[in-house]
Length: 169
Image (tube, rainbow, N blue to C red):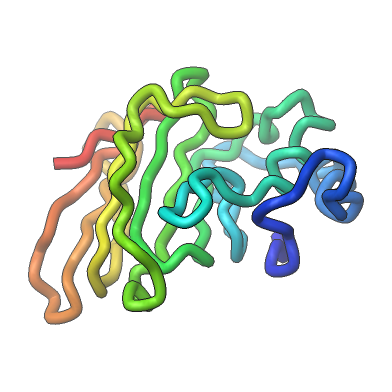
């Protein structure tokens, strides 16, 4: 989904979100689908707190939910690494923008219990340093493992993703 022009900060009456409302409304997904977009549907940054108001408001036309079948949401835009899982069991949001961390401030937010787009964050984690993430199928029980490496290829930590929950260690 091309979300490169979605507004981060806007009030409900000023958001230009008609394009995104239509895209969310027409979206269908096969089981195991990943939604990939430039801007995260849900995300935090140090300057504004929550971001991508336009996408969150556009999603309200679907009663705030993504189509059944979407398993993960992967985005960039914020210049850090972040993962959020939600109390209502919607797909986790990964923000994989840590190729440009010198362009942002580290997050100091305690994610658990935070509200974003009317949702409660169940778990979250961020990392402020250059690196990359590799996703691999989980064990025999399904899901995924997201392994985060620094720019030299050194292992930093990994996250298990299963049934809309994320546990990072």
